[in-house]
Image (cartoon, rainbow, N blue to C red):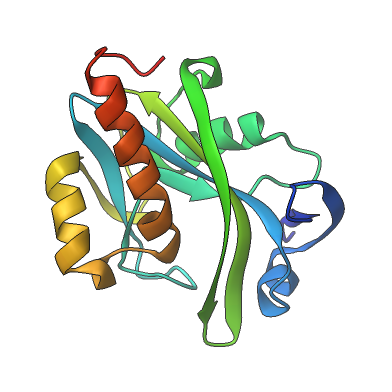
Length: 180
């Protein structure tokens, strides 16, 4: 059965629901999230699996997806961290940094999302689900910021928007040595 996504207005107020394929075919604004797990100046990124219907082979944040109709953002974040990377994480240890709207076309499909950005401290094990990610690696955030300037084509559309926000936040928090 196809996932039902939460359609929203630009203030993130739910306005309905639709199937995942219909949402992307009709470019309907829907709720999404991006998770960045960080540790000691690095963030865990993933290279999206070759079989993904868009952005295949591009680098993105630790985990990203959509909450299903009837599911909270927090529930969806925990579910997808486990599904994509075998990471069990307490959402209470994460911060909701910001949200933003973006739209990107991928041939006959598009992403039109209100993307919630979550950041957490993590230094544990992970195991990428090969249906979701070809590989995952810890990347130094300064090196990543530099690489994005010179090779933006390597990164997903939402990552190019979200990472600079996470990077600025991390640089500010680095002084206090915590994410809280």
